[in-house]
Image (cartoon, rainbow, N blue to C red; front, side):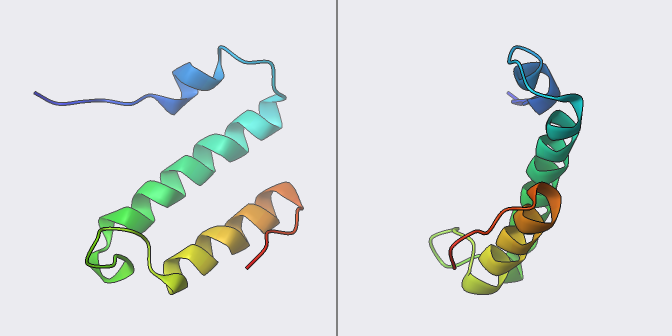
Length: 69
């Protein structure tokens, strides 16, 4: 049984700007990309430090915020 998660459908139920919605979708897709690469994962299947730093950097670029490292 396959599970398909549609982030766009979930976000459409909330009041956010179109730009933020697009950024959140792109961020979700980037996170999926990081998890698809085995070298980014610890033995417990969490993101390793390098991948977490990439994710934080992407969040800072997309939303103009500072993410604690």
